[in-house]
Image (cartoon, rainbow, N blue to C red; front, side):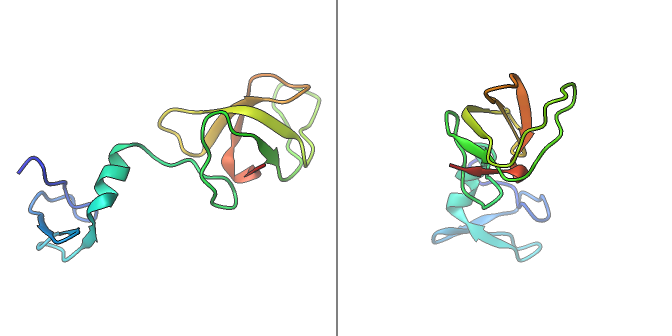
Length: 113
């Protein structure tokens, strides 16, 4: 039974496969079998529009942002090239702008370029 995942809704391990989906008889929750392998791969990082981001992508800031520790704000339209994903945190990315190095930005203020 170790090959069967736990139910994402109730957390119980009493799960069975029904064609291409998993079913939990305890709570009645059903989910696709491919979802278990996607969760094991880690969270997907998405920009403000819902587009998936990957390491090395280029993003654009969608609103003016104040930067802690700097008197220079990030203006709307600033390009951040060659981003890095923060491990186990789908809401943040790391990157550099032309003027400010070592930025950690929330993905809700970015869009993929």
